[in-house]
Amino acid sequence: MKSAKHISSLDNPLVKRVKTLLEGGVKANKLRAELSIAVAEGVHLAQAWLGSEDLTEIITTEEGMNQPEIAAVIDMQLALVPNTDLYILEESLWKKISDLGHAPPILISIRIPQPEFPVHLNDDVLILDNIQDAGNVGSMMRTAAGAGLKHVVCMKGTAQTWSPKVLRAAMGAHRHLKIYESWSLNDIREKVKLPILATNLVAEQDLYDLGDELIDPHAWVFGNEGAGVTPELLAISKGVLIPQDPCIESLNVGAATAICLFEVKRVRRESR
Image (cartoon, one colour):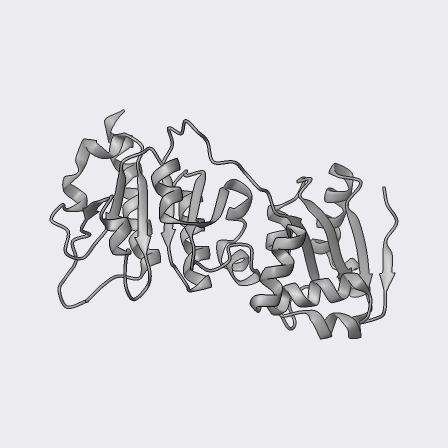
């Protein structure tokens, strides 16, 4: 088991890296892509990656070491993956990099997997088409994992899935998903061989009339918060309408995702 390393300088390379990744923006996106490393704050996210080889670093403070929840995370991770690096920051330094105020002081570094999209796929796929709000992206990923999906495709323009805000909103769902980012329309055409369903406010097909059609795997497309699914993607999809009261113009994209994916679960359970 490795010994803890103490850090007291804001100029430490690890601290600089973590600070950049937490601050977000273009610089963080570039660094994340270069290193294939993401950072996540909080006890819950640390617990979500317990036992994973992808959890490469745990960063806390002396105060954090004395908190039972944090101590339990550290003890278990080091027992299961002894080569995990443990860093202890001075309290004043932690306050300069952390985004969570008075929350328990723990932060983890996660190695970002680079999965290959399966050539022969017989499982449902969630496609995020230019979803820009990090909270929506994380919520949709959490819903996908909860509904039993394993594959999430993010079109170009979608918020970075490994950013701290998306990680926080997804609440550990990343560990259970294979995530493919920055896809183009051509990528969809070439790689996704499943029938594609796209939510659309003017579609003629009602979600609840699909019935047994939902027993077979599909790719589900949900579009931008304001503009919806792009016309090019709609052109290769079957439009699906979620029936709703006309007093509301549209549903939040996260809510729409939950309605559709759990309707699939309901249909399949009743077909057994």
